[in-house]
Image (cartoon, rainbow over all chains, first blue to last red; front, side, top):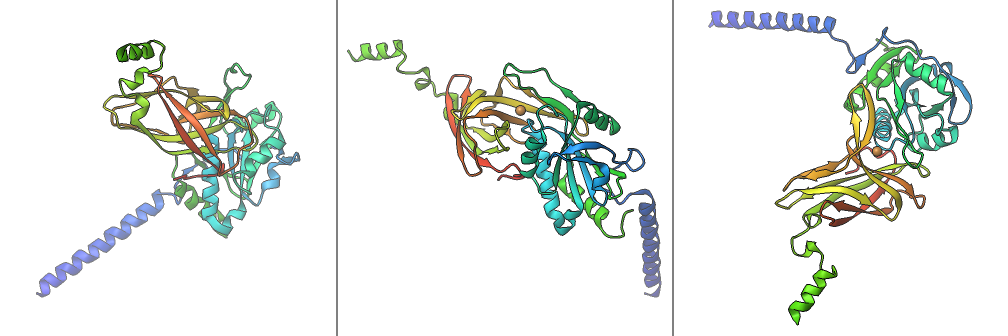
Length: 205
Length: 151
Ligand SMILES: [Cu+2]
């Protein structure tokens, strides 16, 4: 009786030691992020473009906000709207915290995407979405900065054309540092989780 | 006399071939048909789930609508973390008793040049054309741009 009690105690303490060792190990090797951590691997947010109100803006105008940078174009009917609709749902799930977030939708089709076209487009998705356009060289420089790419596909008979483009969503913290990379196929909850962490006061791991 | 008129009807095409062998469209039912509406007259995407109850495949080859000057069957190419674009699809086979889904980030109807500015809540009829020249008219519900889960 006493022996078995002792044995149980020993087993229990071993379990505690093992589990605390495991969790310590877990702590040091894992990150708090569920998305891909790009801290230190991508440059800070920097650009000079025209917003959907026709105003010249720079990355400094969005300091203090967590920025979600996404490249797309308005004549893209499937994946771009899906991505923006998903980002809208993510911001809804964040509740009031979402005021600290801006979706920066940068057009890779500046010829057709004037500020006015972009304005109606982003407004249809979320009040915290901003449309950005600029000269083709400014847009190209920004995509290159984040190792994103886009290609204008051959035109169709009616003069319209499609643009293939990178689908990543780059997450910058409120100081403009590149932090995370999400893809449209990542579950929304991962983005919700990580944005929650980035937006929580005093918590920017 | 009766036979003669029947033959004559065949000859002038009054009785389509589909009346003899059940047409592909007859076996296909459409559900969850919706259009993601974008502002102004930007190209939009139409989505629908097609269920084939027939014992042979039904092959979707095109679609048309009185509302859109251009309706094309497209497929998006989405590589996780990579490039995304889309390409035209010549045909989409729905296997016997099988299902085909036109859904975001996959197959979609590319809808261009609407004859009017649509609004959420509108219904748009789009007719699906099958390989045997049978047709299935489907009512698509027009939904807001930021619809994430339409069903
Ligand atoms: Cu398309």
